[in-house]
Length: 453
Image (cartoon, rainbow, N blue to C red; front, top):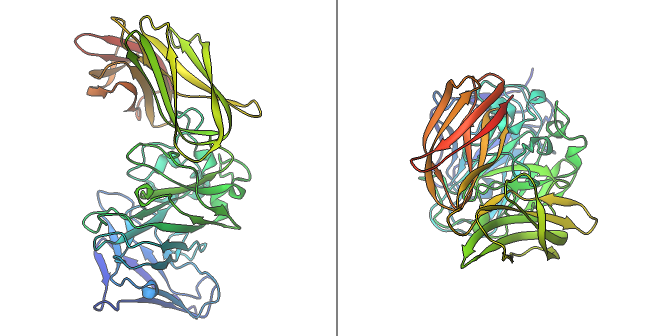
């Protein structure tokens, strides 16, 4: 007779508590399918009908969730949507906390326990919030073998899955088909100052298989990354952890301030030789001062500064030596003395083996020809993405038209900041073809032809 306990938690708040001694214990001597109890959260992934399911552990002790009678990791908790959460009221306690997550929905899946070692107290009576999901957690659901494109089911605070090389190409092929939420900031359970943590991610190698689009042998190159929702970047700090067999161990943000909520595992072969966290140009007097900052460098030989009048034809105007290898912030500057009117700039970084990578394009100028331009546009499958470079802050209305001039969509009052701004336009329901996008206000108008897939 199978010894299976199936607990389906709906959209109510499931609270397990008994003063401060609350515990949830999974007890079984079997480790095979149908030989141990497991929990299945509400499988509804729609925010409209599943406002959030919590399993609350109101006990700060590390043994508040315990597995008994087993000799190996077993699949216990099936989440598979961002909205299905474990809220562990750890507060200022420290220790090693294990959440026995697994893949799948209603059947026992692959064990992938999440281990969080909390090494500092933090402040406030906070809780850590945990959830995890793969492509089954996207609206409409879908099997993992169609889920290689993480851009289709990003966490709510994640704005892109773009690569390090250009900042504009979907890099999902080099990330595992899964996200984890490890959140110290969810109100009203948030910490007022984040604790320090070190995290070990167990993963199912099948979620790093080709799956219709992943890079071959991806599971042998995975380290942890979290999304900085303040900067909108995946790689403002280097990847974290060490790779083992089916695990990425000891992924520790360098400071509690670097502890953000949304995580995935990504290939170590894809990061840039540099991590570029700032790149801007400003008119100072009659020259353009170009400034950039790297957070880390790997085998970085030098930068070439390239300039264009039309963002199409480029010429080198100088080089700056790189730091080689670094894990700290380094600031660079270059002065363009021939700064007459608006121009476009980009950095070409060259590493010690001759490989080059190119940064995003910025616009800068002195005098009356300061301006704004659409310097890049691409279709990521769901959105038309526009990169707008400007020497001035401004507000523009956006219109997307077909080849006959028919207006397909409009977006009013798009804020364009000095430097580089990325705009996203939802293209779902718009047919494949060539379109014209326009940005305009009372004093300026610009347009660009775009191809939508």
